[in-house]
Length: 171
Image (cartoon, rainbow, N blue to C red; front, side):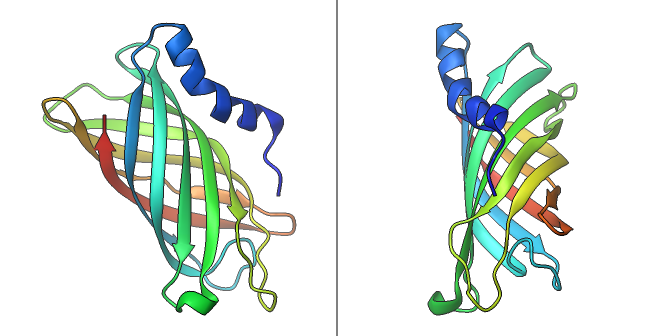
């Protein structure tokens, strides 16, 4: 599976554009918990855990654009049967009026790219369209975030839905 050229360009250029425009980018780091359905050959089946990094550039108080990447491992079957996915994403983030927890909508596109494969049960990966919700709890210098960001993974021969849940810190 190859990411489209615009997605690759956005992933590489977004942080550089923030510094060039003297904008205050925000960076996030957190954990992914990913649930995938059985009976498909687009992504590994079951439960995966991983790490995610994201850089976001605010356009105004309500809208940001972000580029991020995650690595998810389906490791519950043991080291010999573990499978890994790379999950780059380009997103728009719309923040709702603040209460104690600031809610937001997130949506965009990206991909699930297999980093390892099982020759008996190979997966193909695919282009993704994602959309979800999240909440950020502002602290003094950082924020805690929690989000659910389902993705439709479009493989070569079939599609499937992936359900990631994330928790982390925004710097």
